[in-house]
Length: 106
Image (cartoon, rainbow, N blue to C red; front, side):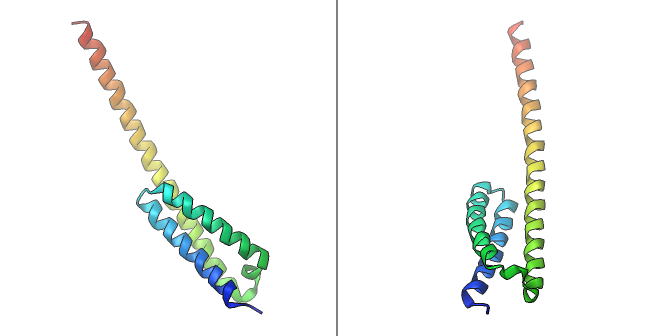
């Protein structure tokens, strides 16, 4: 029999994944990491129950997988953006160094 507590765990996991996605979109990765730890704990509790493996939870399981995929894609996109910005900063830093070095010879 499925208890209300187990249903609340599934709801909590979904909520945590949604919050992680939102925080990742805003680039708040410290919060994403904190939420990830909490989501991991909830997931472990759910895994022990085997609840998500039940046929009646097929839709919820698929919904959670979609959220996980969305989170992964959001983090990947943010990572690509950060990498691109770092390249620009490094290029500008190199340009400034070149100007500084050339100015010393005049």
